[in-house]
Length: 90
Image (cartoon, rainbow, N blue to C red; front, side):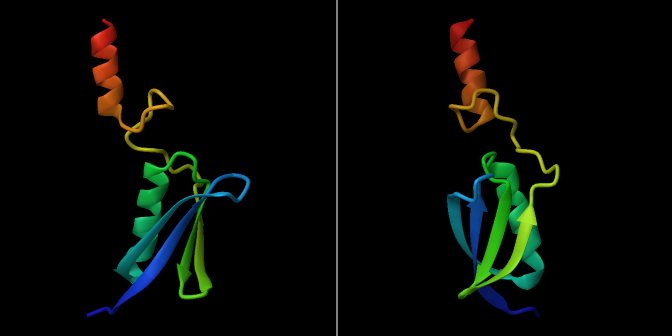
């Protein structure tokens, strides 16, 4: 069984500004999948830096990973909220 380690995921915007930080206890095999999940959740992130203690262990670029669910209104974070707002205005 793979050992669990603590990783820090830093979502970086295009100008290398940290927009979100996530700390997770994962196996090394799960790190990339979690980083891709963060890219899908955080539209402002261009790169995810993965840290273990005081060293970067990976830098994962967006490279076409799309946000899900799609953000219809940039001021909203979920498609359900957008659909509710559209229903109210109809």
